[in-house]
Image (cartoon, rainbow, N blue to C red; front, top):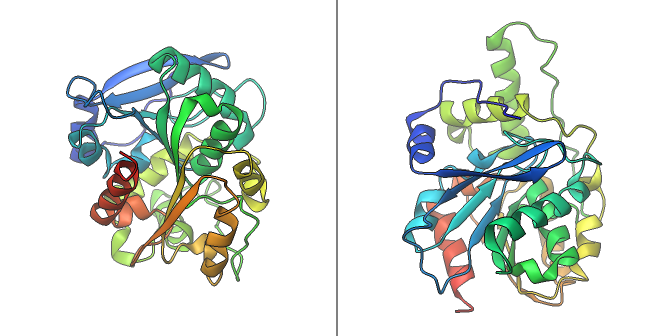
Length: 291
């Protein structure tokens, strides 16, 4: 089942789509959609690199990162997670704990028995941690990006405003801009037209309602079982940890294989979009440190 983009795609999106290969693996009553880059030019000595997007997102959460990662010699695979983007919903569940089984099946189909370097952003970070805990043979390295589920609440609750009841597109866009400012992006100038249009398109295709694990310590508990190297990259001004950033590393250290936490200055939650160049450099340095 396809859930096509509902907006006029930017040149940035169109260019990446034209260079991608689309693959599908089973998911629920339909398919899990994957976009793949760099397969022909990849360095076979490097593990495949799988990027998991955040909640109410799609592969476009990684819009400003894919090209640099593929050009580094990586085979980059980016799914629309079950229930988001172009992918069918999982058979059971509407939260991050419903993701590991269809994702692990897809990885087996696409990679065989080869382990990947798994990078998860926000909701996708929780899902990535669950995959690494439940299917350890699938993950060579785990990188958490702005992941919640660590049992740490911000000093002030983040309020996102409703928009579905609004009839005027301009009114909806104003609410979406406010929500991006409240949760996703630190600087007003980061809320570009591209950021807005990607966000609007993605939230319209979110069928995974009623998620609550992000407000628990579910990821922290899963990390206790993760044996592979674990790294973390967060925006230094991530709204999810506002006023509590000092509590982040002690929880991450619960992972037996924890290596390091990298903070990207001048960035909020959607760090890989807001500070793309700095993030790309940090991620590649992190992934390559063990080589």
